[in-house]
Length: 534
Image 1 (cartoon, rainbow, N blue to C red):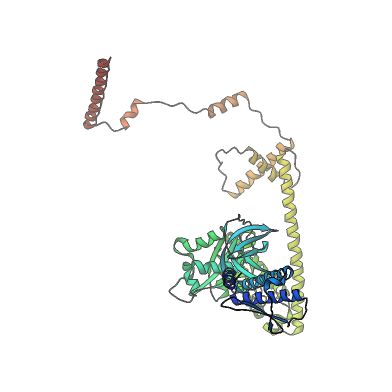
Image 2 (image 1 turned 90 degrees about the vertical axis):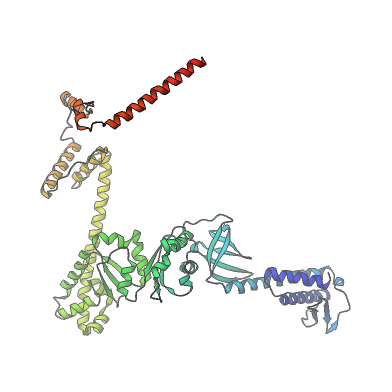
C-alpha cells in the first residue's frame, strides 16, 4: 500500500467515525513501533520511533534515532499481527472517546432514534452512529415500540464504562416535557414564557406551572395554542398522557388553589412551621380535589412544594373544636394565643404535637414549662383521637365485609340474620326483580318514606325466612292481569273526526283531477302499444 492510498483510507475513517486525522496517524505510528519491538524482541520503549509524513504518507522507522535499514514487509507475520491488534485497539479507543465527547455535550437534548430491540427490559435505540439504552425505570409505563419505530427521547446521561460508552435515554423524566414545550411553543424557547415548576407521573398526568415575563402574552393560552393545537402535539407524543397547565403565582395560597383545579377551594390555611397547607373543600368537590387514587392532590403537592391536606368543612371545624376544647381549659394559654395558633396554621392537636415546644416558645413567647404543658395535653388528646379514628375505621371495614357477605348469601337464596338483614334483603329482592320497567314514584315526605321502608324491610325479611308465604294468584286475578297486559284494539277511522280536519280547496280538486287524467292517458297509451306489437 502506498502512502497516498493510506492517507485516503485514514481520511474516510476520520469522517465516518468523527475522529481527528492526526489522531489516527499517531495511532499508526504507535502500532508500527510495537511491531518493531516485537520483531527485535526488546522491551525498551525509547529504542524505536516511527514517523509518517502527513502529506505523502511515507513511513520511516528509527532505531536509536537512526533510520532502520529494512522494509516493513521484512518484519514478518508476527510483527504484522501485533501491528493490526494495536491499531484496532487504538482506533476503538479513539472512537469511544469521540462518542463520549460528542454526547456529553448533548445531555438534556431531545433526539430522535430508531427502536432496535429489548434487552432485559431495557430498550435499545439507535441514535446517529451510536446505540443508547432506555432502562425500564425511564420508560413510560405501558408503552411498547416495535423494531424500526421512530422514538423521540431525552439524553439523560452518558457514562464511560470500561470499553464502551453507555448513553442513557429517558421518556419519563420531567425534563422531557420541558424540551417538548420548547419545541412546540416558540415563546418557551425564546424565554418569554417560563416553566416555573413541574410535577409528573409518567404515563398518567403532568402538572406544569407557567408564567410570562411579557404582560401582553398569556402564558396558559400560548401553551395551549389555537384550539389546543400546541398541547395536542405534546399529548400525542406522550401517547395520551394528560397535561394540566397551571398559572404560576408568587402567593402560595393562589398557587395551591390553581394547582388543585378543576376542584373549587373554599379555604386554605398555611402552616409555615410544618410546611403544610390545609385545604377546605365542599363535600361535592372532595373527590375532584383528591383525584383518582390521590393523583391530583399528590401532583399539586409536588408542584407547589407544600404538604397538602384536603378536608371538608365538617372535618376542619371538628379539628379546631377539638383543639380549642383541649387547650382552653389550660391556664397557661389565653384566647389571644389560640387566635395566633389558628393564624399560624395550626388547625388540630396533631399539628401542635408535631410542631413541638420550640414553636410555642418562639411564636407565642411561652416559657418552657408552659410549652411542655401544652404539648403534653395536645399529645394526649391526639392519642385519643387517633385511637377513636382507628376504631371507626375498623368498624366501617367490618361492617362493609359483613354487608358484602350477607348480600352474597341473599342473592344465593340463603337466609340472613342480623341488623343489616332487612336492608340487604330488600335491596336483593328489588335488584333481582328489576326488569327494566317504569320506576315507581317514591314519597317525598320523610316520615312516609321511613314508614314504607320499614314495612318493605319487614316484609322482605318475612318472605326470605319463610314466615310469610308467597301469594298465589287466583284465576280471576290472572284474567284481569292478562286483560291489563293486552293492548287496546285500534279504534279505526271515525267519520265524525273528519270535521276536525281542513276541507280540500278547489285548487286541490283541480290538481288532483289533472294527475288522475294523466295517469289514465299513460295507461291507455301503454296498452295500445302492447296490442300493436302483439
